Image (cartoon, rainbow, N blue to C red):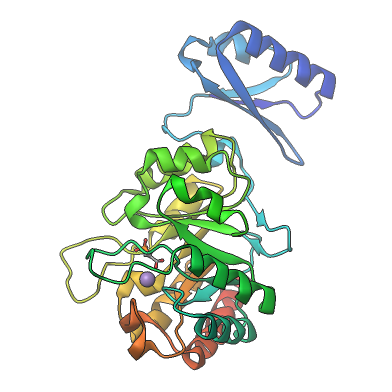
Length: 337
Ligand code: PEP
Ligand code: MN
């Protein structure tokens, strides 16, 4: 339930009103204060709340029931866009186009440091790199695990780029202490125990849409993280399974404006996993910039033909350089319209 308060109310009236709500009903109250209005979002047993009684209170402008099952992730609860700001200053969701780039997997120190330096020079503000890899085959390279995270930290020390890397198990959480943004991969989007644990972590979570999950299911997974108290969720569309076989997945470009309408959370696109084909990454990245994505996560490898994972979709640093310039131009052009 959403309660919009009148603009002429005092802070004391708001506090008294919130106390009345929590005393009378089994609810918790989320408060969003904007320049022109204050919105109270009620969570819990709202069926018991008498809407007519609430609407009749002096301080109340309007009352709405929220039909959607996601509440904290819902734009109705938080009309402004959420901006994720790292302690080191990098932002996602502030209207700029954030670029997250790096190899699918961390392979060795020279590789990750070389790619980090190149993507930074091209304009990336985050370094990606998998240390724990979810592979379809148990015989495929599974990542360097803890050593991979140590190498990412070395690349961060050299370049200053914050690191984004995937977690596959709650039991690894301690290893992620120095990771700046924790990625939940497509295959773990509905690993609810993992999502609950990440709800208690004080860092941004990059949540990828599952291979066969709906937009509402993605928002419900974000809700799991937010319900635990972590509001810093970045949604990522990375392609879904369709009957098309030409591409690895099918990029659901419409997910960007839909998610931004339904939710206040930032939305980014992963054109690398969406297509699986390196020459498709640039046009899809430009489409993402045009449709209003808050960022892109792109696989870049110093030598794609020798990559231990996802070489076919990886760009060379030179190709990323070209892409980065083009997508920023698309983003600025679209914003100026
Ligand atoms: C990845 O980012 O390397 C990855 C495995 O992504 P996804 O979970 O989208 O397949
Ligand atoms: Mn990959």
